[in-house]
Length: 229
Image (cartoon, rainbow, N blue to C red; front, side, top):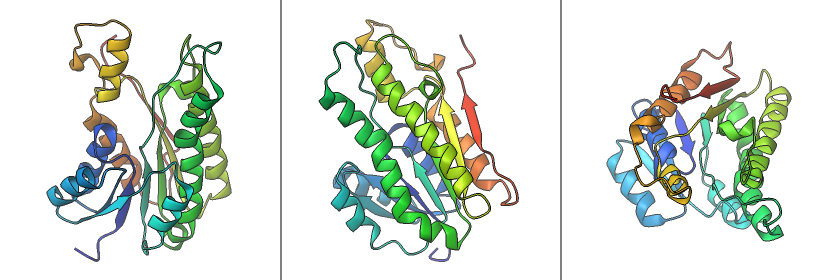
């Protein structure tokens, strides 16, 4: 088991991140990223070959400390994120900071710290973005703004590391997760039907495709939408 390639998945304790961790666990040692030690430990126990990566990604010092013990790293999947937003006229500076801290700054910082390890093995960075990385809507400007910025970060990283580390940006549409349930409830949708949305497993399958593509090619961007309108 210890000779397996290593994948760190942030936000791995639920939703898309969990599905990705489970999918990659058949071939990789998984570093299970999460803020809650108990939930992280539970998934570690369920996987064949895994270890915890526990820290608050918004805490710069905690992230740096958590990275110290990482030696080999073949895959870095950024799945952690928050979906808070508001009308521009109502969004406080604190909200902007909170959303960008997790959705952009933490991604940039963690990537910076782990690029040397990834470069040694010509690894891959997979960034779970959103359909909101391409368009915004009323009330969604804060969240979309962070995802637009994340797409810019990913595009720049891809060119900076071309030939050294592959970089893939994955843009799921509405996905059947806790975040989606909360969003639909806030919109007044009392009859949530998860079958109308992309499953987390489908997003994980797209990540698998990007990871398994031979290293002489890069899947640079994937857009995933529900089949049902």
